[in-house]
Length: 287
Image (cartoon, rainbow, N blue to C red; front, side, top):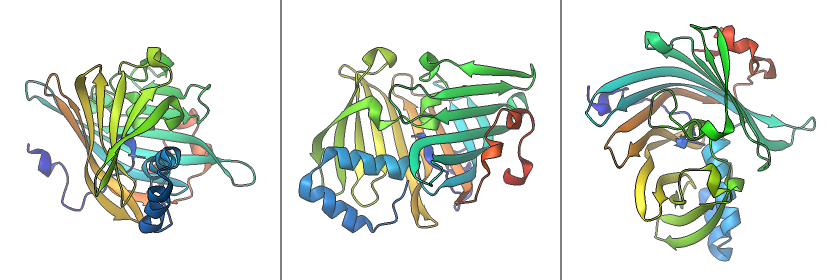
């Protein structure tokens, strides 16, 4: 199977919200040229990073999509994972954003992972660890994922649990390294280095969309891991990463993630982001 045939030409990706998206999480309502002018004038790194986080993780008030991962190991062997992602931002009673998020990932294929559910309660507060659970249907077991395991493999892929739910910018210190006509290049250093495997990472942010397009992770001088936004489309006015890739630069293995049917502002009810949905998925929002 060629990577380019995992989905059709018009396939849609939900957030790196994930990605990274893996990586993945989101677009701003203001015109990109206006946003860029603000940052270029002051070179305010904190404002730049905040805009990039908004573009990468917070498109709309909520969203859903279908997704598929192609996992390729160092020997060229392939595995597939297919799932649905539901995401909703947490607001105050007055409707103000808190920076917290709720997420559910429902696996449908292959058979060995069918019915598995990944649940996330993401917290913007640096002093509060995100809550993550994995429901294993064969055992009817809800397994809590320890904070120390957030940077381990997500269901056998090259994505980490933290890639899927997103790494909060409050966890790192950022400095502007350089810029080109099209991108800003920032260096991020973890505030709690003992909690992660990297010493720093370099992130390239597109000046037009403010999407992070490439992130290279380092251990000292060794660039061992890369997260890329391979393809971007505009969906409901939001620049959205529709294909992302995570590469293990040491082994040569990689995982490609593609999404389709991306929708924003679908009015997902708070009630579905609960432990009950792990065993009884909300079918009305699964297609």
